Image (cartoon, rainbow, N blue to C red):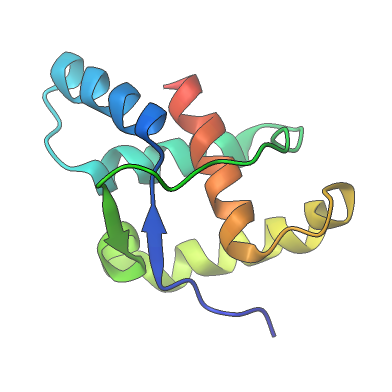
Length: 109
């Protein structure tokens, strides 16, 4: 069984992108935008490109805050995608896999 994700920490670049999105959309919560980013990225046919994404901003949220009342659903979808795509990435953990998808999704938003 894959490990649970406790804390999601964003990079400074992601934070700046989300600040712009918050301004344009009027959506105040990081977690809502990050959920949308995850879903957009998971909907893509390709795996997200691997990159070392630093956790160098002051934006962090618990898995419970990130996923909200549908935490079990998000985790099930994420784990299924991880099982399908992780062999094509170089030994990434489930947490890193999540960060890659959030990163690509923020760019798509």
